[in-house]
View 1 (tube, rainbow, N blue to C red):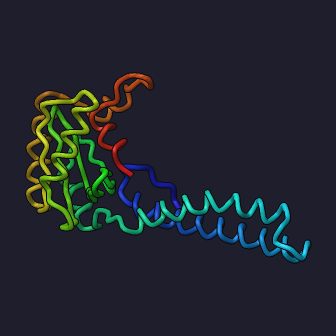
View 2: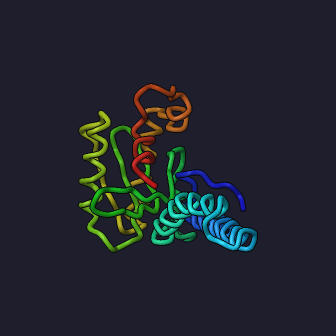
View 3: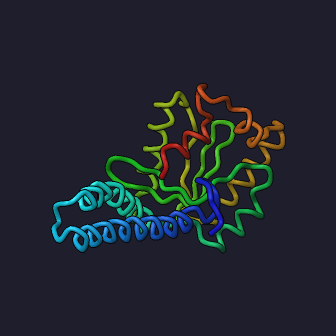
Length: 200
């Protein structure tokens, strides 16, 4: 299984597979320790059972994490292919779930350029304006105000916006990847990094 990082296409699928393997392994270890303790000591009151009980905590954490990713929806392969055709020199991130107290927003793709944030959403379970409001609030909390934030449900509209942003990027000679690469730990996160940091 090839490692996938947050923002890469296929990240949600990767995290689902990783979660299944990790949760299954934890469960097997917990059961093996508990059963071994019962067989060796003829009682559930033994040190192996205590270890098994303690391992229930990371097992539960892993299971909850898995459930979150099982409910998540990533970017479709057809949309990914279309977006790559329109991406140009833009930094486009895929397959992230923006979290909030009330709900989670499945974002198929997003890009940030010159005070513009746009997202593609292939999930109709929430209102796009709620996503825009949440992003605006989180960006403002991180020192980025006056950003134009637009979420699209139609791939064609999103690709048209990518073309517009690519023209701006080209005219202003902006290199989004260089901006990310030049970030120094301990300083204010870039706007694109903030968008990822508020995501699963």
